[in-house]
Image (tube, rainbow, N blue to C red; front, side, top):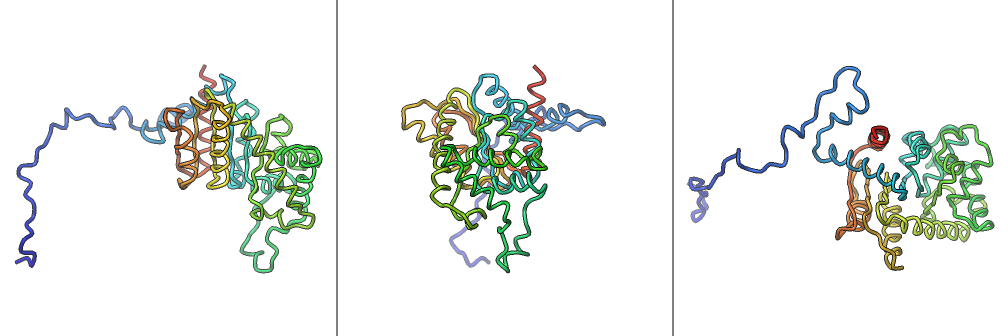
Length: 321
């Protein structure tokens, strides 16, 4: 006997049902994945993906990227340092050579890791092993390069991203072929660098000039606003691996563009990360494309898998026509 005297279980005898075969459904067999045969091509792989969720979003995004290139609209890549640390610079460099990179916006860690790869062929120190003795981030060559670039940026009235490219390329580093910054400098592709002062290792080295860093990165913010303004009518912004800085930069560039009276419609945005954080999802995917201004995509997964797959989809699609 239940102690809940006034509570009786609901009876389901009179529940109304419907015919399964007459119900509209969101998933059908035509959307299913297809097994790959031996010797399958990249195209076969892409066509084998299920047309469900990201399996459908990736080809659509690739199509929008190809369309933007054909229409002469900007393809802006926002990158966090993890993208460089996972060895993806060669993929981005190849895309740049193919015309799929109009500009690159980076946070400070990209400057660190890309320049270290160019100079030493390696990066990403063991923080746990060096932090205890205060050695973390104290690599001399890295600090000297980044701070010299900040001073150059101010003396030549250029942005910090461009200045690092000039400094690094001028060194003719041994591993420059693996450097995205060097590749962009050689192809005159704009790179804008967006710092959080104190967040990067170069900010506590001898010779650090906070005013120079601030002025140079502010100039880059103004430059990225100019790039975003050109996105109207089909431009694409891709955020890879920046959870806070670049989503905030992009959102402010969007509002600057619209505040100054420039239209910003028909745009495509996408966030790629292994966790969908609040800021990129809100400030990249949703807000800039709201009210019919465009379409945003959120694709979850590791950069070392998702970026090469996107690149393969873009290249394959361009080669089809």
